[in-house]
Length: 139
Image (cartoon, rainbow, N blue to C red; front, top):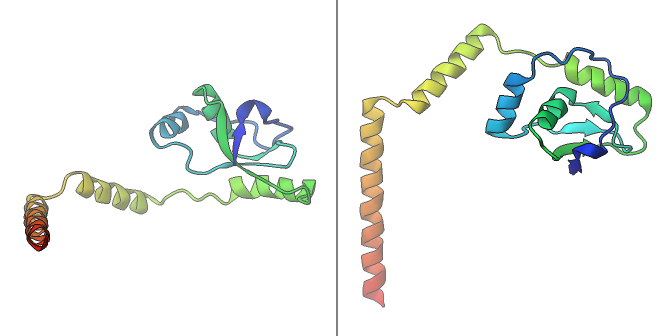
């Protein structure tokens, strides 16, 4: 659900230090919000304060949020806040290196892949021309 940022209330939070938000702001600018924030039915923030603050500083007026039902009590809300922050796992160095290698190959394919792509596109273009010829000859 899309929510007006001005309607969101921030009550006492476990996390006190939001850290540097510049990288998160850059990510929001480039990719948008990939994971919605979480609010209770009163629009009190449960999870996603860093995302919310980064969005505010970018001048966003609205943000995507999951809004919990009235039946989610305070205990469960605090458990959710703790769980979201506690269960994150950073990439290992090996995973991160492999991810960047794959990204580099996608961004800069080898000469062989470029040639194969060119040939495949050429065959597709020829096939489309032939299909159009047959379609026009039937009319």
